Amino acid sequence: MWRRDFLKVLGLAPLSLSLPPRAGADSWQHYEGPNFTGWEVVVGDGVYAAPGEPPVGPSDIETVHYTTYSELRANIRRRRIMAHNITFKRIVDENAFEYIHTCGFAFRLPYLPTTDNFDLNAQTLEGGLFVWDGSTTRLDYGVGFQWVLNPWMDIFGEIRTWKADGNEGQWEGVGYLTPDTRWHEIKIVVDFKRGTTSVEIDGTPYPACLSRTPRAETWGPETAARLQAEIVSLYPEPSGIRAMHRAEFKDWFWVWEPQPACRVFLPFVRAGA
Image 1 (cartoon, rainbow, N blue to C red):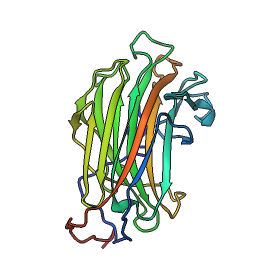
Image 2: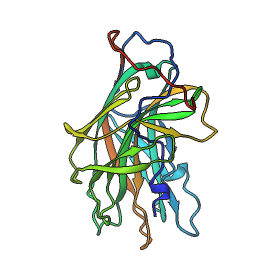
Image 3: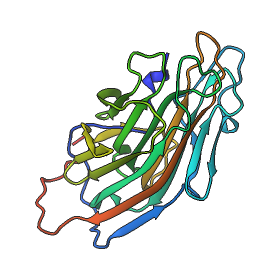
Image 4: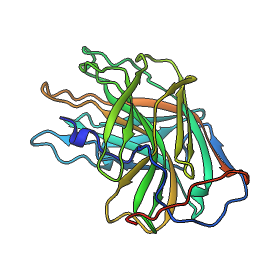
């Protein structure tokens, strides 16, 4: 039903990084904004097209920016498809792994997914923080979450996190958040050097771990960090539902904290060593 259970650009696994030592990082960096203006928008791989429907493409998603928030939209042409909107900010920095990253944003649904809503409905709302190691391990490290919003599913409202240890990985249920139209706030902390993570929604902690996810050969040779928000529109079968999905995001922040000099770390091990 779900393509590879929504294998996508997110990942998690409870291991320290298998990365070689890199140059140090000695300055704080702080990014923030009321909306996602200037972020990139791409089609993710949590997609489906019913027989006879053209493949899902960029014309099936959009991200619209307002003064105080941005709205992600998926299946905007209301086809018999499941479309995946990934909106993200990317920073290329060879020292990205040397920082402790603290990030987050507020999110909400402008409608409530229900089994009698064939106009607006949802599969998931998602987000995460990742660093792609394109020069050495060719793995994508990070933390992500998924809010299950398909009202026909028994796990409607479940919070999941992604677990992958150098493989395709899987989603794991870690808690519950009642679907509603209120604003919610997520905070993610990732210490890549220690391999530790933290995920909180509205101040409630959810279990999460650090991932190692392989990516396509077309991914570049750079080291690049990404903060991203995502939505996946409703899987249309078996009734051929043509619902659009919308979700609002605002007040994002992303702080890069240099590692304290007093910290002691275990030696790194190169991938494959």
